[in-house]
Amino acid sequence: KGYCYVHKLYLGDGEEALLRRKEHPEAELLVHPECNPNLQLNADFIGSTGQMYNHCRQSNSKKFIIATEVGLIDRLKREMPSKIYLPAMEDAVCRQMKLHTLEKVHNALKKERPVVQVRRKVADQARKGIEQML
Image (cartoon, rainbow, N blue to C red; front, side):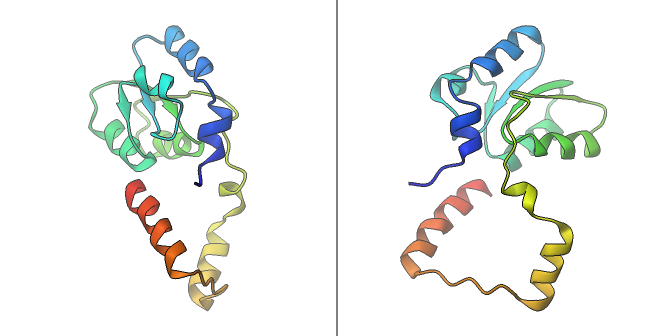
């Protein structure tokens, strides 16, 4: 079974996130569902990154602790600057996500390259995970 190493390895047992929560008791703790169950038990909200984004938009809270890849915080700060966003863990960075650029995405869409082919069984399994994230 696949998993995101940021959620499993960096966020680990959730101790750093729970410490951050003690420092900011007024903040909502938003946790990705791939994080440690102990961290989930202490969450105010559990959801995908997209669901976390929507929750921040709809919530009356002014401060959030975000337990997922820190890149989400950049978007939240840019699009909802009146609220405060704290990472559950400062170094929860996905190296693979940082390899993607708008230029690379643009070129891939324009040239329809590289072509990636996967077996039907693998595609069906991947589809389940992608649909859960959406």
